[in-house]
Length: 128
Image (cartoon, rainbow, N blue to C red; front, side, top):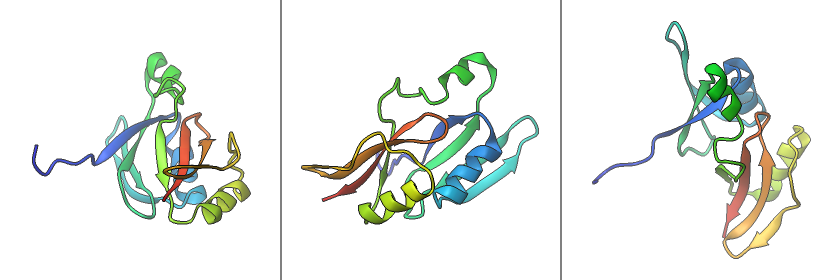
């Protein structure tokens, strides 16, 4: 496949507006689309430094609702890269985000695991 790239990733959320508030207001992502499609909305956000967009997909039905926060079976699911770990870790902590661990230094960089309000586990990571 020549020229292929991963453009977006669907993230199940319980409510569009709560997810937009978290990602845009708390995390500083850009809202890149919010299109009413009648029975649902097409909502995308992107990190301030670019990269893969998240499609905020409101869960519908018991199976999808049960999967919110568990899309990766309890593993870290998303990796938010930063060019300044200390700055972003402090900003996120001040915004009320709870990290599961203290920052640790690995051969690939500095990393700490945190959860979004919907239960998804993320790495905040600054690569070496």
